[in-house]
Amino acid sequence: MQNTKNTLGRCAGVSRRTLLSDVGMGFTGLLLGSMLHRDGIARASEGAYTPPTGQPHALPKAKRVIWLFMVGGTSHMESFDPKPELNVHAGKTIDESPYAGTLKSPYLKENLREVIEGLHKVHPKIFPMQTGYRKWGQSGLEISDWWPHVAAHADDLAIVRSMWTTDNNHGAQLQFFTGRHSLEGNYPTIGSWVHYGLGSLNDNLPQFVVLGTPLADCCGGVNGHGANYLGPEHNGIRMNVDPKSPLPFATPGADRYVEEQQAEFDLVGRLNRLSGIRYPDDPALRARIRSYELAFRMQAAVPEVMQLDEENEGTRRLYGLDQPVTRTFGGLCLAARRLSERGVRFVQVFHGSNGGAGAWDAHSNLKPGHTRLCAEVDQPIGALLRDLKQRGMLDDTLVVWSSEFGRTPGAQGSDGRDHHPYGFSVWLAGGGVRGGVAHGATDELGFHSVQDRHYVTDLHATVLHQLGMDAHRLEIPGRKRLELDFGKPIPEILA
Image 1 (cartoon, rainbow, N blue to C red):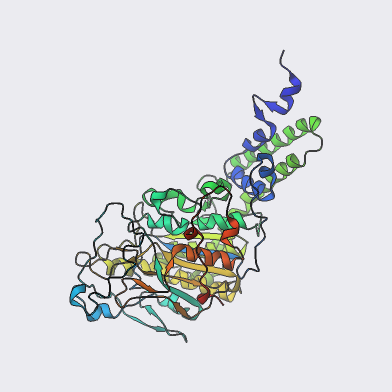
Image 2: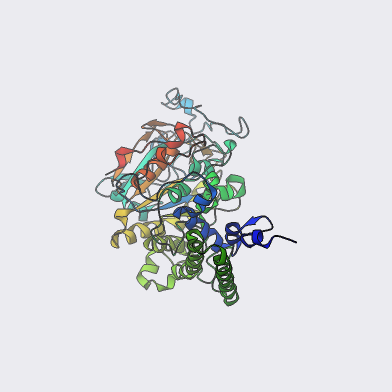
């Protein structure tokens, strides 16, 4: 006869805690795992290394981050690093220009890796700028004419014009979020490190949310917002700007779904009472039950965030929700503000994902392509900055704009530019960042980062620093990290 005493706490070799962990999976289970690991319950039961306490290492300047990512490689010369010398020497080869020889930077081959060796050549015919530019704001920052709404906030921007990376293909997208070349495998993303290091501002919502279509499988896929060895509880949670279906993998508004979830919690309660016969005082078990109930409440909070029609007409118009060209990305930016307002730590917003390399990948037709894409995002991003500022949120919300690399100064074909990892631009605003500054520089043609060069992890370190976190103190014993992985904050752009 089977020993019933031994089966009360265990079922077919499965522990009571594991059984309760597996009840009610899906969105509820995912969010529950996050809370349990943050509270130390699951960690204690697993005997694993104890992560940070959820408190910053130093006084933070920012509470939250909104990261805007343009997928495919935005041209830095037609956005935030205008280069008039391209117009002066258009049509010449680089060797025919006054810069022959000067562009043979010692950094040209530094750690650069190509998926197919020699696939990307330096295109020798200098391609002129495809739009104009002017000085904006009291700071006089030079920004192209394709970005007038963002440029109106020039005095709030810190533009870093000296970024570089090591992947000359679109694995650079994954590299931008992890700091590691895609050939080295997958690593935790910057959003996951923030999630791992800091406690929640609102337990009714996830701490790391992904809006828009993420990276395609060719260029990182789900690993572009994943946590890898930090554990799935620190992954980004994808959301749709649709109150009826805000989660791609669950429909919390459906009556049947809610009833089924309630039934699951009732089952957990019954299991709790059964286990209570043998374990009358188990704080981990009680905490687990409370966490399931809290996860259930999250499913009510998420649809409310996506009710954009709650915003007044002026706000909806500000983000461009009344115009077809700006409606989609405007909705993402407005949802990002609403999520941040309600305490989400890290919101990652994608634009340009198209199932491949990305819409910003301007190998041809750069002018019509970038004209259209900039029109889709410029007004919504400008609106986000204005809205955050007028609500008093920009002071403690760090906004980051980036793309995986820039574009070549030389022409590809007759009207395009190729991938360019040697020098490109990003910008930051709010969250304790100095406004109206341009830090670092590329050369006269925009080819190399030649002054105050910054690898992508310097941007990561700057974000963590503003959140009060030290990347080195987030290191996990036994996990190999290179010094380059940690990066260094960029003090020149910090207030």
